[in-house]
Image 1 (cartoon, rainbow, N blue to C red):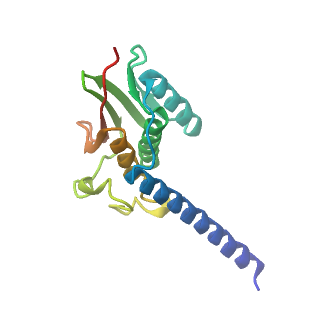
Image 2 (cartoon, rainbow, N blue to C red):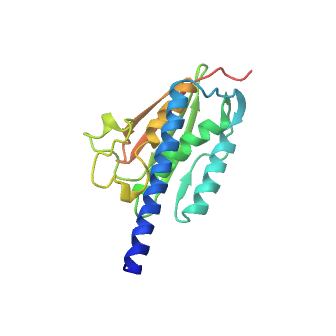
Length: 193
């Protein structure tokens, strides 16, 4: 009968409902990816365009974020632009979630005849050695800072891995020489003629 307690309880229920809706949506997408119900497009994409879009999107959300990449060079590959963009959004969102002060993310791209390699490196604390083998597991939260209070459902990197798999590639996680997190995406794709 306490109106304040009722408002508080309703707010918590609403927040939990949104959280469950997000988990269900993510699980459905993961299932579709794993069952190959999503067919990736094969389109010519500009890596520079992708990196510029990411910079614009994330700077509007977190103004003190620095996203560094080589703006002078543009490379082109054939893959699904929106699916690859979703992978980057997941990775960058994770980085900025766990870097409290002055987040810096470096995006790199290299290409050979048969593969395109993207590296995403941040200036955070990196992965604990016990966590590293599990970062792509569903719902895995390896330490106290990776909890629901920090946001997310624990499915982001699982979805990123599933997307990269259907894009004919692989994704790995490690720590950079500078100590931050380093995620590497290697796509097997034909070079442009």
